Image 1: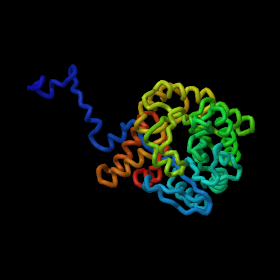
Image 2: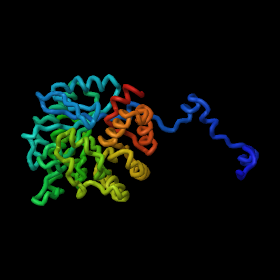
Image 3: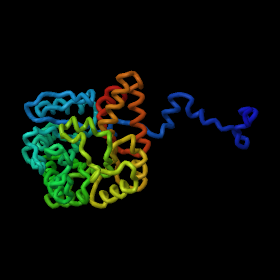
Image 4: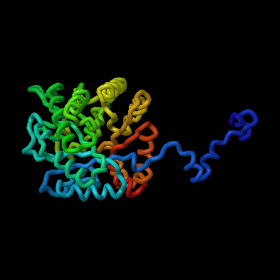
Length: 337
């Protein structure tokens, strides 16, 4: 027998507690909803390939393609029509332009630089975030310059990242987004930008980027050759939390305007803990592996895609995200919002 004789025994004092009253119908649920998802929360990642290439569907990222340089404005027009306010650009570089030092990353006439200029000319109000790291530009696929033992050299890499950031700023980018996880790179990039007069170019720092198993499809998308690379000497240990908080605080001290946690759902606890201790906007990246898992489950009718995607977005908002970088951004605008 239960410990009480009737529902009346659930009373506290003379008041019977019924939380379900606030879940009675959709109108009431909407009024008391604590977190909502809007188009303003979304940043859409775009893979841009060299001029003269053709649109390439990425098998491991269903619905996502490499967009050739000559077709980028059509893609941006669709994004603009959907009401998405920000994009994050990633280059797919011709292998003949790659080297050990990633020199193509700061070519003023390079793919990324030309793409930024082209978009800004036609869509000046679209906010452009551009990834800052050397993995798309190096033959080995690491995020920086390596020594003879394949160890990524910190300060030598930071010098190149500053050149890359300056070239993107000169092209008109709104945010440079260092994703390399080198020590001191935010301070160095901020100093370089300010010294050259780019005081209004902002920095979104990948502050808590973990050495995750969920990056595989992305590495295929940018053809970095890095799918099997061990990046644990610079990306964070998935077992750790305190160093993520330390990295976030350091990046803010060094001049980051926005910080980011990557990946998404497996690191919501990290997002919440960081959010509680900082006073800048915090973004989260729903990475390629997360997207692909949802797509795969939906394709086998294991989940309702609309409900599952919306739930994951709300989870990130609830955990404290101000912005969400997601390959689902267009799909969400077309199917949910």
